[in-house]
Length: 79
Image (cartoon, rainbow, N blue to C red):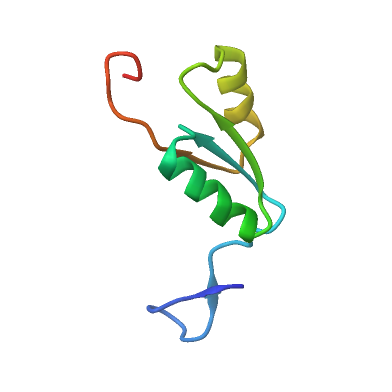
């Protein structure tokens, strides 16, 4: 449930709870799908976009997410 500090006070939790937070995944290919499955295992809500998503969907993901991950190749389209 908690990550414990390796520096500072031993045994003092650091970080934040992921349960019921929202993760936004940009790029829902193989890696993005694995991240989504792991996030659901932590009890997170999952939002995702891909290369076919609209700008409005992308902006909504950014606005609604507590955590954002990017899993896409760097190409002229994604740059």
